[in-house]
Length: 292
Length: 255
Image (tube, rainbow over the protein chains, first blue to last red):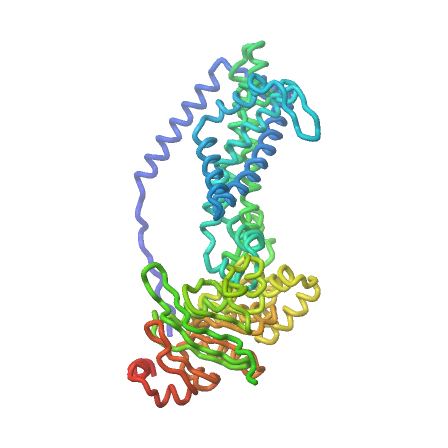
């Protein structure tokens, strides 16, 4: 038997694509040219990118974002579980929390926390004594509470959706094995809900990195405020804002990569083979990868 | 003196809203007995099975397992609902196998089998692992210990599910159409495992459409329809020489 004749055909020409590509490239070129000719000192942007107050600001942005997101995740899980509760008071309070903090602007909430001392002059902690609110409520703490508690309302909805996505048969199987409700939630439902929870949570964190810039309004010296403090003195507005923007992009890029690996880890068991990492793809491309 | 029945059901009723699914089930399953529940879909077989480990609450009648009321405690002539912990403890002694397997997809086969002995019974990790490996070997899956459910065939998954239930060393096993979700060629391997269990003297209540299995392995066959027990007896008798018209009609269609 002879091998079948190989099929030869002229592929369809996509002339529209060539035109589209040229239009986009020309527009991009004009934009680059405009910025190249603009009254901008790029060397200053480079200089300020590594300037100590800008780096410190980026560090504070990272710190407040990580801590606020962590607070948000903890609150989100607690509130999501509260809303599943059979106790109407517990589930009602959970609903109220989401309604209140998701329904008002985060900037307004930041102002409220920062000015707490106006309505409560002293804060007393049973067994620990009391303190002046103005001393305790630093810009850092106000930013943490404002951003974290606001985030908790969004995380509660994300976690609730994740729990709802887990098949009811899983809970039944766990119960049939004699597992308690709490154990079932911790060992069976939440780990599976993670697969649904993680992608939007990564989104939330990347949002948080940028939303944390609102804390400049309550004088927390994060990245945007650091850049603004400098440009109000030297008037190099764009140079400094670009330096800050570069830091934001760097941070969001790094965490997007981290999210990919985290999602991959929690995909275990839900698909037969895990998605290949970019590094594995590179290895197969250059032919040094192990056969999978 | 006769032994306490493993399952004793007296006038059990169950409704979902206005739909009455069980209309008075009277049934006793003795220790070591293999009881097959047969009947058309919607006849209440699965619902009755789920009542036995309190996945469904009954509305009327009495249902007890090994002399203990399911889901309630009687003091004087008052019934008290059991606490969540007490219900969980009762369920730990009853194994259940589901139609859709319901394996935990984020755990390996061994992880699935180890979970409850470790977290509910408080076995050490080593003890749970030994028990898990032995059970997976018993269901013929010693080479799939580290596989995730998604990497297993339906028949293999169901065998892991049986091992998972056995790991709690139950005194009673409930099977809810264990082979209905399987490709025909995979049914045999699951039935073989169940046959082995029956031979070892396990008390089993099996909801099934496998008439051959009921005939070969069952000690009793119970034919249900419309929420009541229509006919019961020796499976050979019930399946080959049914006394009730309804049973005859059903068997005429499926055999």
